[in-house]
Every structure is written in structure tokens, then in C-alpha cells.
Amino acid sequence: MRLEVATAVVILLIGIAGAPAAAAAAAAAAAAAAAALDCAALGGVWASPPASISDSCRLTWTHEGLQRTVHLFLPPGYGGASAVSGRPPLWIHVHGLHSNVWFPDGLGPGGPLLDHEVTGSEVDAARMAAARTAAARGAAVALPQATGDASCQSWRVGFWRPSSILPRCAAPAADDVAFLDDLTARLPAVVGADPDRIYLSGFSNGAMVAQELLCRRPGKAAALAGVALLAPALGAEFAASGCGGLGTGAARARARLLVVHGTADATLPFEPGQSIQGVPMLGAEEIVSFWAGRLGCPAAQQQAPYPPAGAARPRAWRRLGEKPVRCSELCGGGGGGGGGGGGGGGGGGGGGGGGGGGGGRAGVVMCAVEGGGHGVWEFGARGEVAAMVWDFFARGGRGG
Image 1 (cartoon, one colour):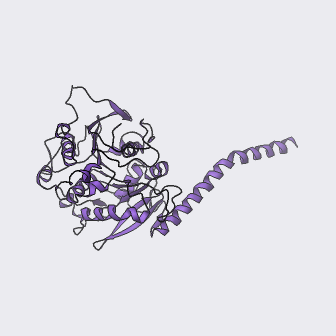
Image 2 (cartoon, helix red, strand yellow; image 1 turned 135 degrees about the vertical axis):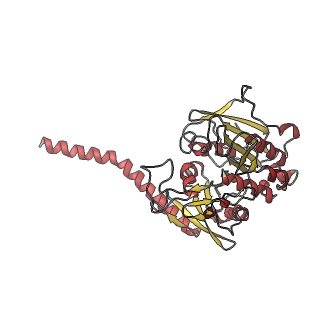
Image 3 (cartoon, one colour; image 1 turned 90 degrees about the vertical axis):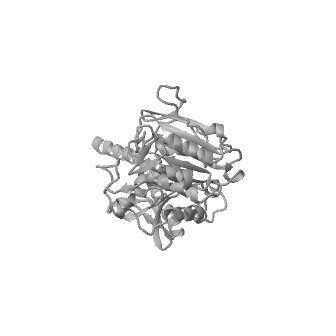
């Protein structure tokens, strides 16, 4: 009898202890079902492992006869494109040149084995913790996919073409600047995003094509509430003669631009005077100074912001793992607004929708990750770099 009673008590306790977990699982399943319905309403296809690294909505975007893929992560409680209130901000991120593996680098071995070779947009989505970013910040996060074959994808850039040595990595007919121009112009309406809170970021080759977009579409910088360039490069000749300027006065005053670069990057070097496959590239400080000039910063505030070795460093804004992040602001951004928490740690900071906009001058900020290499997503905990970028967006383009 005692044994039977004891057994019943244990079963009861297990049931009680398991109730929260069961409730959480049921809530997660309900949220996934709602997101899948939202995805279908947008004309997308809901993808879950093993068809995707994480749950996401896949949109097919036809541009100039090519069918492109956009991975979309929607915030909880997303009301659909027709919602009249609570329209989310939209963050569009452009991945870098990618050679594929069956599980995403940094998530395996032991990570999720998929039914296909992962693409560049999937990997960057995992590294930036796109689903968690969307959930924590109430934003829609979109990652467009470059062209190429199943094993390699890249963006076609006028001043440097990896497809010249890796022809399988990009479709010859792809006009990626025009594609991104079309996507950034029309996707906000498709998802019902707040038109005043549209953000763009790019990593490596993705940061190259993002810069070319800003150069070749002069009104784009003013249409975006913030731009972040992660481990970028910019052709020196293109910067001198191929960038058409971004308008004048109020047309460009809204632009907020952040550059994040590791000082030990051996792929796209931080230091000036480097070439990539014979193409001279600007260093990180030169890129920041270039954009400060293009975005209308006063001449006295366009100088290279990062001091030489041995000189006094700007204060550390935060840390990514063991690496201090030192940020310099070239000209003060106006605007500002909610959200941005400051500290490091596991992707915290910067809740809410972000300020994005406002008046005043363009904000241009350079963040040097001391000792950091090319893989910016590997700095700190997963999602931490994304949180740092969102902090910048949420502050309206200020570095801390």
C-alpha cells in the first residue's frame, strides 16, 4: 500500500513538474502554426528542419526573369500585411560569399543535419540568430539569397567579381544591385512593415553590394533608417569615380551608417593599402571617412577615427567575448529613439522597434573589434553581433 501511494505521489509530482514544459511546447507549436499561416498569406512557403536550419518563411521573388529566394522571420503576434497598427520594423541583411556545407559552420558537427547544402542566407540567419532577433525586438528580418549553384553563392559587384574566379558562384545575368533596390523598395509593403524603420546590413561580399546599391541609387540612403556594413571592402577606383553621390541636404541627412570591422581581418584587411586579386581596396578607416563625406558630415569630421598603435583609444563601447569593441562617431546622428540597451552579453539590449530617423545630420560610426578576424558572427555569443547592430539602429544611428 505504501509503495502504491509513493508511486502515485511520484507520478503526480512528475506530472506537475512536466506541466510548464508541456504548456511551453504547446505555446511554441501554436506560435509556429500561426507563423505558418502568416507566411502562406504572404505567398511564402513555411520551412522547418531538415528543410531549413530554423523555422522561416521562404518567399520567391522574381526579378528580371530570375527567381530569387528571401528567407523571412516574422515577430510573434505579427498581424499580417494588412494590420493597421503595430507595423514592425524591417531589417534586411545581405549575406557574404558562401561555399556550402551540410550543416552550418559553427553549429556542427553535432548541429542540425539538413536535407540540402545550406545557403549563404541560411547560414547568416543562423549566425545572427535571426529568429531570436525577430522575436526579441518585434522586427521582421529578411535575408535575400544570392545566385550561384548549390555549392557556392555570391553577389555580383562592379568593382570586384568573385565570379571571375568562381564562375559557378553567381548567375551571369544577375543584376544584384537592381534586385536589392527592388527588394528594399517593395518588401516593406509586402510584409506591412513600418516605412520609417527599414534597415539594411551586409557582411563581406554582401557589404560590398550594399555599398554599390547606395552609390548607384542616390535616394536609397535617405529611404533607409540605418545601414550597417560588417567586415566590408570598397574598391578604391570605384570610390573615386564610380560612386554617384547621395543627394544633398535633407535628402541624405536621415542616413545612419555603422561599420564593424575586426582589426586582425586577413580576408578583407582593416589596414589601408591592400589589394584583393589585384583590385586596390580602401581600408576600414578610409571606408568610414568616404561614407562620412558622402553622407554630408562636416569636413572636419571626416578624418579616420581609429588612432594608430600606441595612441589613446576611444572607450570600449562593449565587449564581444574577450574582444573590446571601440567605437568612434564621426558626426552626430539626429533622431534617436527607443530601445537600445548597451551592454554585451548574449544578445541583450535594444528591445522595441528602434528609433530610426529623426532630423539632424547623418550619423556615421566606426566600431573596431580589436583582434577580431573576418568572421564577425563569431565574435561573442551567438546573436551578440546582431544585438550590437540593432542597438545602433534602435539608437537612431548613435554608437553608444
